[in-house]
Amino acid sequence: MLLSTDVWVSALIRRAELDGAFATVVRKGDMRAGDVVIKAYNTSERTARLYSQSVDMDGQPLWIQPVTSETESELDAYLERRRSYDPDLWVVEIEDRQGRHFLLEKVEGEKTAS
Image 1: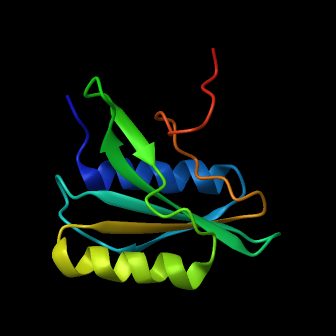
Image 2: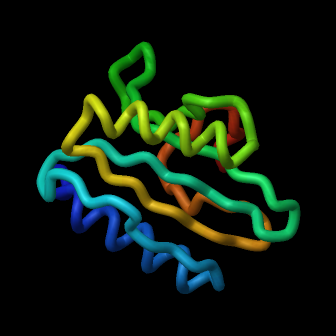
């Protein structure tokens, strides 16, 4: 059974807050099945990264970075474009001294713990 988006987002925010980060919903989308984009802001380096939901070649859930830039204005421009055609989109911002995203799912390009 899959979690509804609002419950999943609440769990992500709680996980971040328990580890000392600040997280908030910037934009709410569809409560049950909206896509989520996470903006992870590194407060120490003043950089940011975006993570968007996707699927891998086997159909398994995966998070990708849809924009390679770490410049906040470029990331915000991507979010504006995405919002214009996806009214169900959720945007969650996380501010953390280490720039962590707090995702438990597989993230493209990151090593998974074995």
